[in-house]
Image 1 (cartoon, one colour):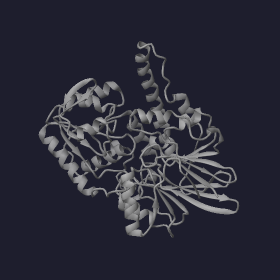
Image 2 (cartoon, one colour):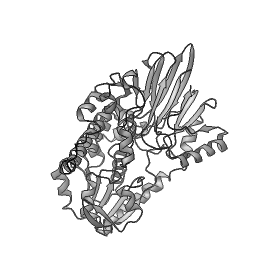
Image 3 (tube, rainbow, N blue to C red):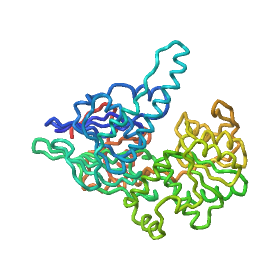
Image 4 (cartoon, one colour):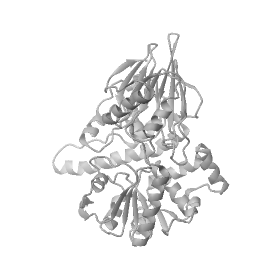
Length: 468
């Protein structure tokens, strides 16, 4: 029997990592994600030695490019891994963007910390990994198409299927041939919300012996997307009447492209009163270009709509869109006091250009701040959502007088009913394990699966190992 070890994203939503070992000796790592959250605990876990010998792996398989699924690949390469990294073509392109950016941040953070270390007479700290480490990992990437079985290691075949989460995201089907026995492991990856624009719906599969099911929103369904869009449109109208700007903190890959699609839809319908939309994120600007190159992977309805209008770029769909890649262009935005929508990172306001725009707009009651997604505990975004009267921004205390809105229907993850709809396509009840979710949400999904399907789902512990 093959063995599966649960190493990351176990009763939490970050640091995805699983190890598959066959009795014939093949070792395949499924995901190599970084733990995120900004706390000391996550930083320490990311810096620990891997719980396996990186040099002994035959292959690495990545479901999609988000850092919590791919972010430790540079560390893996630096620790001795020299084999192939398999992912879809679009995922490889996005990883090139995101891993180099992550390495740059690691190096900058270490350089900043070392200024204080030197003043205290302490030895310098090392970055988690460097740009050279990221480039080494990226050189190992082997892009693969969807729906084509590939032998990634002796006796291990992998097929990627569209997951509908972000561009290039995949459900991973792994066929294990071990001593004349064939077993099929299916990893959902991050399943997309069926209402997400541009992305295809997650592919339903029917055969599996073992299924790893993400459970990020295992406790609830998302708000109706059309209701969310109507609320968004009303916020934009009110902000225009109030005479202020609209600030939208957003993740560069996935969420930003969704927002630009919706804003373009409002513009095409004559429902966007603002005079300019600024995309103030160099990474998001580069991600847009990758999305445009892979337009054939879009949902057929959205793809055909854009094609019928001759639209090839976001600027064609939303003509008032302005890209501001340079610091000088970003700073110039702050001369605009009304009529602008400013989309900038980071998505949870933990850094990036959005905090500079807070300095110029957050204290103004005519401005509006729109959070298009969940804000994690401990982040600046969460403090604002929770009603803080003032927050510290760039070493200054700023009053929060802008009108704050949280939109609940823009998640790129499947909600509870969508998770159940996807998993019930399997012909028989496979061994089902809930991963990539907080424990309390997993418990609710576990109970709901039993009530609706009469299925048993297990919640593994970190480090647990099972036979496949």
